[in-house]
Image 1 (cartoon, rainbow, N blue to C red):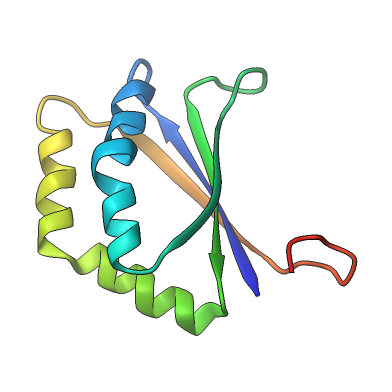
Image 2: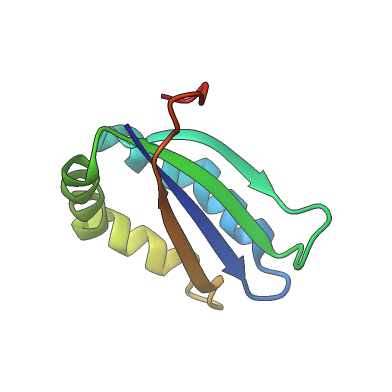
Length: 108
């Protein structure tokens, strides 16, 4: 099992637009491509309150590459993402890390 930690750093004032895009669009595409989200969090106290952090679960890196690349190449996703950013960009930058659970982790 492999987990991907993704952190989206939004432009000031644009976190609500990102959350709305996830609610109404992104999660549907995740379901279509079998992308399993473990959870989503916004930062209440920390370096920036303009961030969305989430965790995805993959069988392995090959599973991740196949599903993520198909999702990213989907023409409907590309169009809807562009539409959500028509008036103004949403995300300034994205960070991701791949995490392998330890033998004593509850997430194995």
